[in-house]
Image (cartoon, rainbow over all chains, first blue to last red; front, side, top):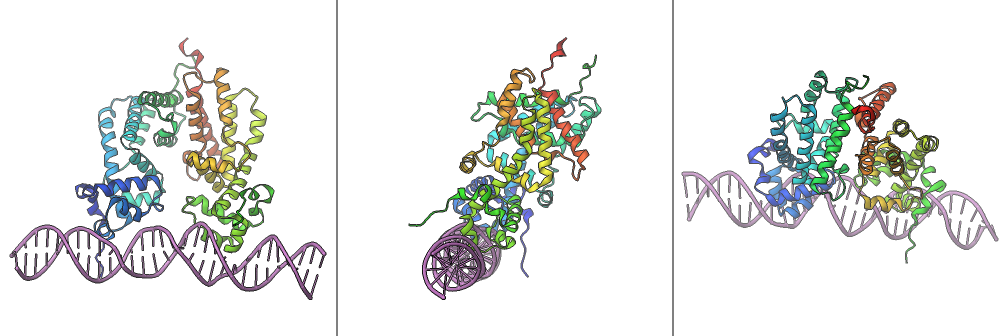
Length: 214
Length: 214
DNA sequence: GATGGACTAGACCAACTGGTCTAATACTTG
DNA sequence: CAAGTATTAGACCAGTTGGTCTAGTCCATC
């Protein structure tokens, strides 16, 4: 009877990655450049200067490492978005909120592109595996957009002929592809004007045009 | 002195995949579901009922197979877009053209989602490897958008404060992510209304609004 | 029928994969 | 100091990877 590893011990302040910064770095490098399957555990251990024995003792297996890493990433990401949503969520200004959110996305990306790509990659994996990972996280990740959009539709800020699901998809698309729209090697001011263009594009597309037929 | 394999013999009407349909199918399945690196040559050969000896004789190596497959895919894709661009390119109606193009994208996707995903995946690989593949193809893939957009800017159909590169990025983003915006299990009429919503979103966002300040 | 090249089958290869196991070491507690 | 537990190192494992190689078959040309 083998005692099986409990992944939950990886999460929170006991996250072993906090005690092994070199391994943490190596994991971010490897997993952000390759698929989960492609990422080489052996290479990570080599770069992170940890032995097989220690690794399997602390993390259980490859999935455990991925989970521990994702825990830190998602918490970091949350720390970028929580203050904004807390502050502006009730302002009633839908486009003001998403402007702030996309700016926060950009800042998160600049702090560590590896985390940005990893969280995007995570959001793009098929729902089944994503669910099997989210089981371990208490906070419900992501869909704050839903309520934001439906209330904006009801308050008449968004043209009614767009469906909420469609708009959620469009926003998610933009937010996880900022890096593809920024000019290469752009300065932060250039980047900000691009972000403004994204918002403008969205806004004048979906804002209900009340005065148009007058 | 080993005689080296010439990849060019894989292209065009001598493409060996045309003679081995089972292998062609197996390749599309495997490469559309996995990364190039993840895709298992052994599995492809097993499913495609071809021996190692035959394979390396006809295709040279894994890259050769990928190249041969991409050749057929890109030609197929071109057959969807060429007639549209030939017919409508000079109409002067920018939004009419991109509406037709996105509908063609959708039809291409419906004919074979594997090809659609593979061509997207190809467009998203880093520029270096993409270049090293494009060497083998004569037709210059993709950037018909550029001239279309600049001429639309000059003719005043697009608001001047959007840069051409930005708009190219936005269009590419939408065109390669149609599948994420369609409602799940959507009928073709549902799909078409979604495509219309995409165009509407783009159009009323970037169309210059001449009458707005009157 | 003989020669020679196109083609095929599959045994084999070194390199690598994630994971297991044992033995030794470090550390805590009595 | 002794006993016991937590941690570590790395040899080892079976399975898979893309690729090579040899031996043989098939088929056209002479």
